[in-house]
Image (cartoon, rainbow, N blue to C red):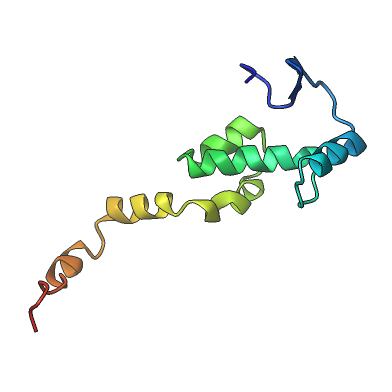
Length: 106
């Protein structure tokens, strides 16, 4: 639990992470996935998208110069698509006429 850093050992933040040390720590923790420092950036971005951060906001927060770089995270949350569909109102009248029948009705 460090207020500003993710990688901390015995309360002290890491400024640089050695790939070999990181992999050894992952092995000791029985993490089966290949672990590398950039994986933390992907995890951070994924968590943001799943928490509702927009792609434009993520791009700004992560410092990506091209939106294409953040599009790889778009599939993690379809919420932005639902919101766009609701805002448009397209098909709303059709959906209201196609309500599911009440249970037990034939």
